[in-house]
Image (cartoon, rainbow, N blue to C red; front, side, top):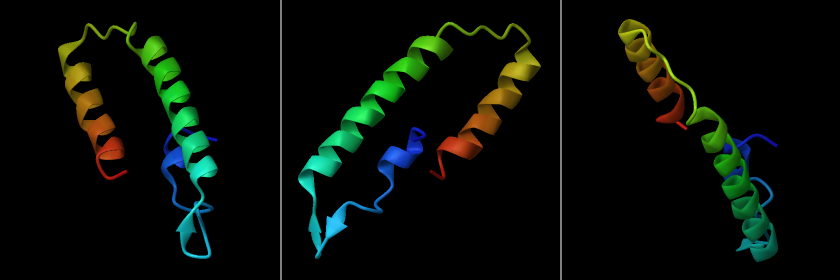
Length: 66
């Protein structure tokens, strides 16, 4: 499962009620994946200022609509 897939509402409701164990597991998975991604990507360095700017715009376009 991908990170944003953890936030998908599919499979969370049964008969109109939230299945708490499923929700809890999704949050647990999200947090674990987020921590791993953060650990990896926080070490990345982009020295080119133009590329930094382009990356910020591209990443914002992907993350903000999600």
